[in-house]
Image (cartoon, rainbow, N blue to C red; front, side):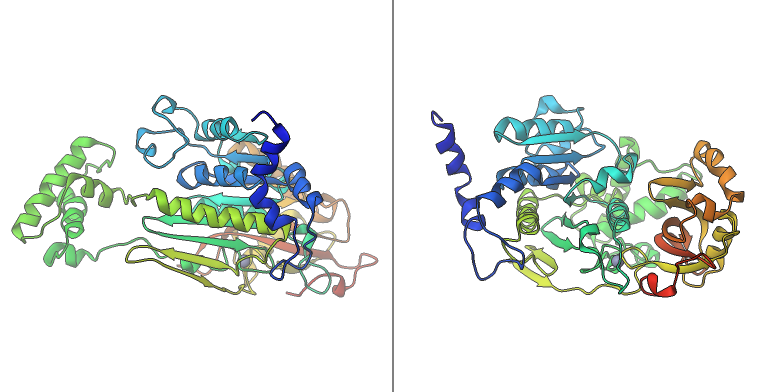
Length: 450
Ligand SMILES: [Zn+2]
């Protein structure tokens, strides 16, 4: 420790092997040298979304991989049940914001790294906040949160007149996920590799047992628990809602499940399993988080430096029986409304914002209702909250041409509920609008086509 320089060089020794030497497996724009290493340390800003099991590992791994400008966003506070795997937290931290404690602990241990914590919801930040980062790394456990970040990151993407994504507008994401002994790591380069929405079908629906199985032919301990939870509870407590956070309710379901299990000679019903099944808790395994995080940190370093080609593009890890890893190359959904060039719409200069919103309802690809509209960083109309709706309502009767500062064409971001009846879901897409009869506009100026 006496010689700070020697200490520093020994710490970057492994990194130097990747960044200072040429090689055969490097990315196309790779330029080895100390300048590259120093630039990554000085200028690369990385956002980690989530400071839970994966987030703690990611912050540590990224800090040790040479990144010095990290930020982390998480809305949760530390709970006792986190401590077995979220290794940056101690008993005295219970109740404190995860992002703040995680940032502090890594900075204490890794000299030279600066981590800015954000203790808030991901939706509380403006889009500009996210556009400031070189790479966004996701350590999340919810599909909704991933979809949200994916929509924000893809909204920065622009296409050139040939319909190719413009690289300088691309916001790379590295997404990790774990579930018990299984996990995945993926690289999302919007416009090139599939975005989260392109492959949303990868997420299976939650396990649901047919009610007839529960009622007539239970075979497993979860069947007995779900019988007590979904059927017996309502029979006995007419009208009273089951509260999974009420220990008395949980105890009741547990004892009913035990009776049911005894009747059918089914072993394995415990209080912990009852909680797990009813609250749909997936056990978290510390080593799975560590392995997935390591893969994500490495991919982040590869994107930032070009020192190797990134994985293409979806790694799965499965240690349920033995150990199996595999990389699958998924392809983009060309019709994807989130990462594609968006929908083209030609408008009259006199068309109001309200008329555009009505058109979105008739547009066969969208059938969109409950629409909110943004242009650049500006909100033109918001459905909710009521205060924002009231503030933006006056725009509805103003011509869109005027709202878009009389530019002949431009990109709007619209969100709402879209799809055919029975299949409607929330949707966010880009709208490329052009105004008829405004000088200088040809259809070829607009990428793609409707
Ligand atoms: Zn997509």
